Length: 342
Image 1 (cartoon, rainbow, N blue to C red):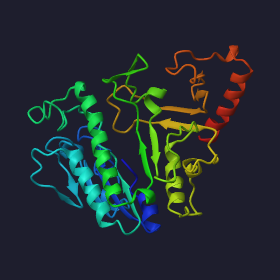
Image 2 (image 1 turned 30 degrees about the horizontal axis):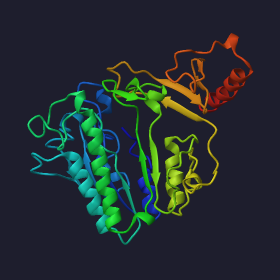
Image 3 (image 1 turned 135 degrees about the vertical axis):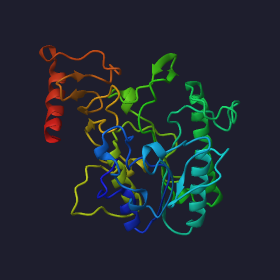
Image 4 (image 1 turned 90 degrees about the vertical axis):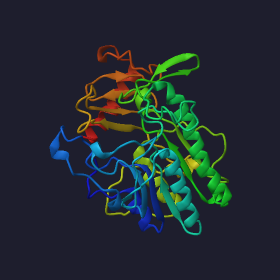
């Protein structure tokens, strides 16, 4: 859940003169079921207070009322629940709403946030699956592949709409994964099987795709190795909009807009992470972890140091007594970050 007093990036974009829209999933209000941590019931930030002019969302209220996000979805649109969604597919509705919003606001600055339902569990068939619609509520990891493919379909519809309206050269598209794949999903990369690492602090759980596209502005086919974390998106979006952040507030992010233009920029030297899965995740085997990392080393607040660039699954912690000069220097640098972020 989110503090109802929190200022979101939508508030900032709206203040910069942008029409704002969110379509997809919310889950920022009253997230917990009624039998778990009742003190969090009815708390959080509602979609209508979050800086968005319009919304089309699943799971805006209590968890037990959320319904399906996929087949026969339960979706709230600007304060009203959609009727007659039987046989429809949630991601189709979300993408269609975005396209309608873009068409209505094509002659003014607009900002769209699409927190996708895909490819989150449950793993249900999509309209392109052989088992749709008869088994549209069946949960089976075998459908994960279909869900990934359909994610590409709905993103393509949005990009096609921007093309149709000739807006691509004036629109920055940022595609970001939110976490690693679910544990039930095994992927094959370079002939190696990789189990999903959602909820883990390793690269399998925290390193995600980030794709930027701005026709005529971002160089095509370039891979940037700079560190980026989620706090960097607000300053990047504001810079792209030609707006500035309020000087009377504190922001941790670093704009990576120069890199999107093919320039060196001022990339960050480290990332700090605090994974605190409570409230809401206390029933499962996740626990709080804090760490700092650069491109090569990762130091946990427990004192464990990994050269994760060469030990991706973090199976070989480096004993402090046996550290070489590089490891010692990395430990000292990252420990200062942890101390600073207390």
